Length: 335
Image (cartoon, rainbow, N blue to C red; front, side, top):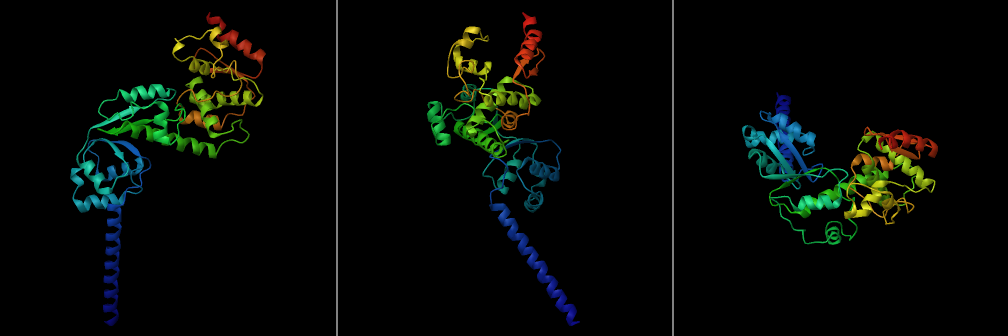
């Protein structure tokens, strides 16, 4: 009988200890900011979603690392029947109770901006300046002043903002979006730089960003990007000029009207890769992740030339003779 009583006491103590540990864990989960995967996470909860389905979706989106603490908190607060379908933009820092409160109120005022690969910083700045419903705190800043504010350096802004879909709450500051897009680009570029292919002709991570922007402008076909990068890497390694039209167009600025002439190719600017060797001084567009990866992991190829085939892709060649034949076959026949 003594053993039974002792066992019951031990069991009760274990239950009490477990309950206390669970209570402590729930307090920590409730007051500690959620370890969200990024500064802002946009997600859509469909109508009729179960509480478990919502929890799993929050894990998949990177809001939660596991569903069980959230499920228990919903149960303890009696919020299960109050969670609403809708579009959400969840911003750090965010605590668990605040998350539940947001989900209980359904769709709220928010704004979405899609930053597209290949667009320029000027395009981005104009689009953001025209966006309603947010605070425009940076419109009076010069490009240099804006970069000083968001990065700590008064550098050229082109290329430094990651193309993605961004969500903003009503009355958010435009400065917040600039910072998020800049920080996201730095993270992706740094990660790709750390795993870069050996022997590349870049003296810095910034030069890789310049190359990525050129690759972005040369093709919209994702699987071609490593080949395009491979051609340009080969040309740099051989001391050949890049001779790429998008850099010339960028250097023309407002003079560009949709066509590029022989005179334009011969008119020297800092971005004319027909008249100047090496990479241009800055990126020429906002590159996406595929172009960044291509610039740092180019295809191993002997190609030194490529020409558009008129069907949205390119023909790659390794000799000038073969390139000229491709030009005659795919370009000159159109005129």
